[in-house]
Length: 117
View 1: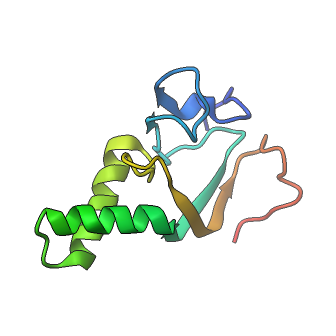
View 2: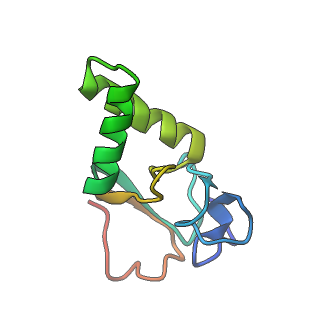
View 3: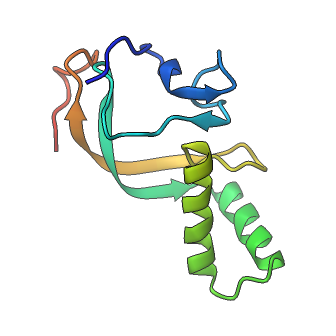
């Protein structure tokens, strides 16, 4: 397990350095090993905000995609692979996730208030 991560998650920021994870353009989302102060969540669903959803849908339609469900899934995977997160590059908006806690680092600040599962 990695140690010494920033309590605000800036150790995950790749670009630009010196910003918090939310406004960052690129994050390290490698979850093969978490830092000792992190919480790992297995994502079940990503709820993309409405404005972002419609903007992405319109962009994909203009590009001529016939299978919108596949195009949207491909877009989400590509975006996450390139940037480490799902943040709409055109609108700057993201969404919310639903998931289950799968791992808790021993130095996670709220480890006594949350559990795996």
